[in-house]
Structures are given as structure tokens and as C-alpha cells.
Length: 279
Image (cartoon, rainbow, N blue to C red; front, top):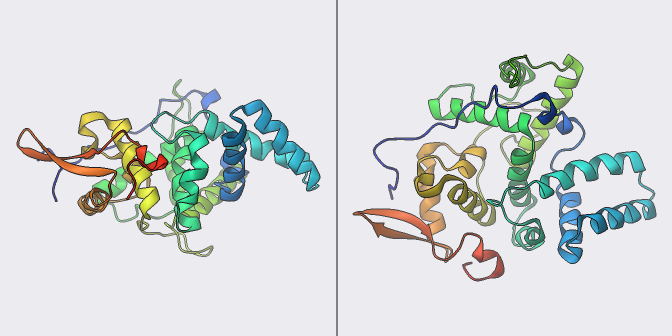
């Protein structure tokens, strides 16, 4: 069912020249999605609701398991940052254990956690925007995540002060491998050996998150540029199929407004997490 106006698809903007040096980091070189550990942190937060307590409990458990403190500190800093800085357009971190439990596969869980990474990591978000532009434009190498293509995208990045991307080649290569590991977890890349991927299939739970995220980020015209679907590399010719899928749940429905069908949540976005809008 076509809900996109005749104006066509709105491109995501390039994020070059948007970020200061302080906003850009290479955290992806040491910490990908780490689904199980992210879920553990979210579960502790759900139980205690206080990040100071979460940190204490996390390190107590690491010590009990004889984990290296330095490694644990890095992982906790990066993963907790994604949750603490999550925009209101994503599920509250205390609701994440419920959302992750509703997922059918580890890939579904990775697809749920993925937008927290994108929202928190400026460099990842920049690269995703560059790739999404290529996908919408139909560029043939849009799904090429080789070092060469990723580095080409990174080299196009400029800081807000106009200076160029400035990390060492070895660091950049590790970042590219970290990026590919995320792409494997969300289903864009099939295995360790390949660097060219395809749009992943979306399970029911990550689809609901992606649609709710798009709706809360995009306002009334969200369906012209559904950011949650674009971040998950869904091409525009697949959006109608995904809109139809989500409308078959109890969480979303098509309604007629001003002579055209629009997709709207049946209640508030994410009400389905507490069972108020789920199928």
C-alpha cells in the first residue's frame, strides 16, 4: 500500500562538517554491539534504575569472573554511553530487556541494539548517512564495506572547523573491521570472509522499533524518510512492504487523513512493549 507522497524520497543529509573533534571517537575499534553484555547492562539498569549502581554491580560481577578490569572498564564505558545518551525516540533502556526477550533470534537483538550505537557514535552515524545516500541513489557499490570503500567515505569527513579526518591508517583499519562486525551481526554481511552485503531481513520486534523510531524522529512526514528503516539499509522500494507488515500488528494501523491513507500508531509509540499494542 503506497503511503509515500508524490514528492518522492527525502535523502538523509551528509553529516560532514557537523561534529567537533571532541564528538568523534574510535570506540568501535574496541567495542561492537556485544549483544549479551549490552543486555546484561540493560537488565541491571532495569532492576536498579541508577547508573552508579549499575556500574558497581557490573564491576563486582566482572571481578567475580576474573575479567580484566581495564577491558571491562572500556566495554562498560562504551555500552553504557549508548544507553545513557539514547534519544527519547528509542525505547527507554529499562525497557530493553523486555524488547530483547521478545526477539526471535540473536540477529533480531542486534538489530534492536544497533540504532543505539548509531545514535551515540558520531563517526558511525556519518558513515551510515553516506551509505544510505548511495543506496537511495542506486549506486552499485552501496553495500561494499571493504576497507577501500569505507576509508573513502571516512576520508570525505570534515570536522566542524573544516579540518580533515585525522586518524592513523592502522586505527582506521581496525575501525573498518569493527564496522564490518556490526554489519555481520545485523545481517548485512553473511560471514567473516565477505565484504559486500545486502539489505537484511527484519524480524517483527526490530521492525516495530525501527518504525516507532522513525515516527518519533520524523514527525508527521516521517514515512518520506523513515530513519529507522534507512539505518537498517532498507531500500525505498521495500518500505511499503514493511509498512504493510507493521500495520498487521496491533501496534500500528492505516487511517484515512485528508483523503489519503497514513500509517499511525494505534496508541503511543512503544506502547506494545508493555503489551498495550503488541500483536
